[in-house]
Image (cartoon, rainbow, N blue to C red; front, side, top):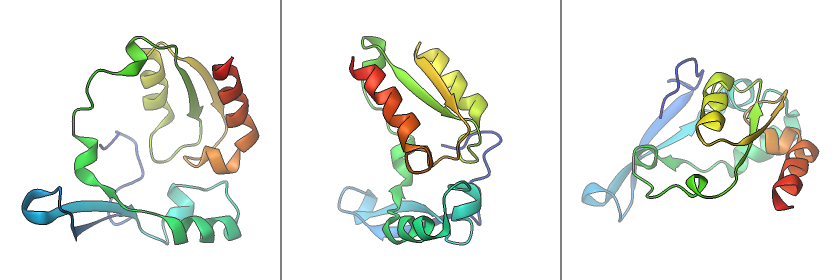
Length: 133
């Protein structure tokens, strides 16, 4: 899914055809972030050594996964929490705030890139602890 204002566009967003038994004709279209664009778009607040590790473990994702229906959403009947990454260049913060509002989430906003779990682990863990109570 593409969000207006996202910086994750080609050539930073790379698509490739891969073998996939669940795809049409045994193939699927996968997407990944091009290595030179990764720090600037995905993780601008993460150090170089960690970026190198993240790139080494980056997995592509099936582009079709962004358009498949997921069934009944759990947020419709379950309390939700949402961490907005205020400096996100993949999913614009305004889109995140709208999503949080739609699901009536308790929202926390942090000055983070898309990689908030890596760059601000204590803040994210704090929200998880609140949700677990």
